[in-house]
Image 1 (cartoon, rainbow, N blue to C red):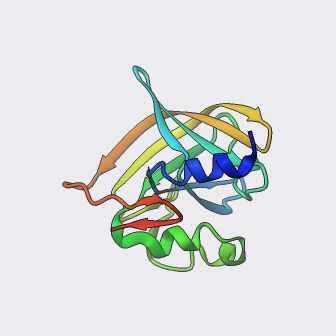
Image 2: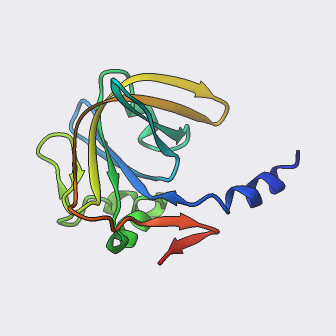
Length: 154
C-alpha cells in the first residue's frame, strides 16, 4: 500500500494530544508532543507511547527512567506546538508551565500520568515505550486537546 494512502487515512483518526516529559541522569529536561499514546493494561496500570528514534527524548527513555505523560487541555495548544518543533527545543522549559522538582510535569494539564519505563520495543523508525503507571492526577472535568485532519479540533 502506498504510504500516502495510509497518511490520508490516519488524518481521520482523532487523538488526544500529550506531551511526554522526562529528565536524563544529569538532570537535563526533555519534552515531546505525542498523539500516539494509549493505555495498555489496567491491571497492572500501564501505558505506551510511540517515539520517533530521531526525537531528542528517544535515547533518554530507557528501562527504569521516570517519565510523565501530560494529556493537554484545549488551552495548551501553544505547549503542543512548542514541544513538537526541533527549532524550539531549547525553549520548551523556558516558561512557568512546568514543575521540574522531580519528574517534570505540566502544572495545568488535563491529566498527568507519572510512569516508569518498563520495556522499549524497536520497530522501524520508532520505538514503542511501555511504562508502568505509578500515579495519576486529572482535572475535575474534561477539556482535552484533540488533533485530527492536520489541526486541533475545537
